[in-house]
Length: 185
Image (cartoon, rainbow, N blue to C red; front, side, top):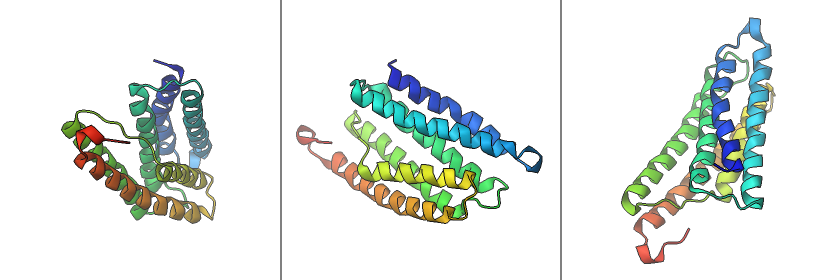
């Protein structure tokens, strides 16, 4: 396990602590919102760090292709769900949570189908996907900070979520129906 994968593993392991800090939040435990924010920010920073390490030191691995997106998906999906149910004055609307989860489930389903048919997976993040992740993370941070302009961040995140979802579906179909001798990523 290389350093980039260890950083991704840290992000995955931080998710239950993030969830617990949100679940135990109430008016008597206001500090837990700040604990959740600190955990989330540490996870976001770890996402940037593992990507930087993997690129600069050429530490690309098949485990990293799974761990990095898994860490992002677990962190973001749990954040969107928790920040819908939490008793904050400003929280995510249900349709936002639905769109975020639906896109990720479609991507996961597509990866499973591709693997079953092609017996390999070589899917790389796209710029649309990176923009989506960035604005989803900014949306979570804005909700944790209880910013009145949070709707701007999650509105942009939803637009990118839909665009990237469509982009991944189109790319997935191209890979699925491509001639095995001419597959490109």
